[in-house]
Amino acid sequence: MRPIDADALVENLELLAKFQPEDKQSTILGICATIKATKTLTAGSAQHWIDDIDHWICPVCRLEVTNPNNYEGCKCPRCGFQDPKDAELVRHGRWYKPHGMMPPEHHHRHRCSECYSLAPYERPGREWLSDYCPNCGAKMDLK
Image 1 (spheres, rainbow, N blue to C red):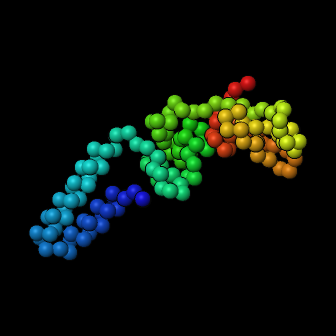
Image 2 (image 1 turned 90 degrees about the horizontal axis):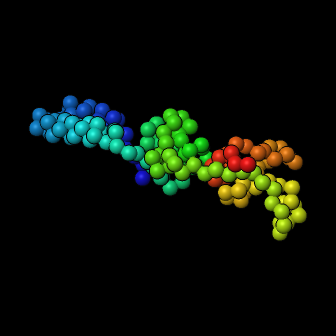
Image 3 (image 1 turned 120 degrees about the horizontal axis):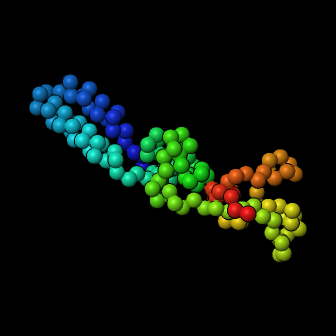
């Protein structure tokens, strides 16, 4: 489900109202006033990332991202919006080399302590140990 751009809707309705008889014009303008009032009332309320099946939409700037967890604190990379429920849910982890029951090809590879995914390669043969896990978004600040 895609969100409606309220400003564009009001603009189109006001344009439509100009070409309508007076009774329909007042009804259309009344709808526009209701939309504007509703938008004003909800502007300060808590907002959340909008789930749109294959991506997420920032409620402030409408940026579409595949996963907000890929960004520090689930913040929007464009406008800095942070979902209130995610404000204190930043995961912390570290890159580590597992020992023990691992296939031999993984003995030298680093893993995320939160999701256990392998660190990505920067180039063939060289791992990229970033400040954040690209899989779960955990901040790699633990020792």
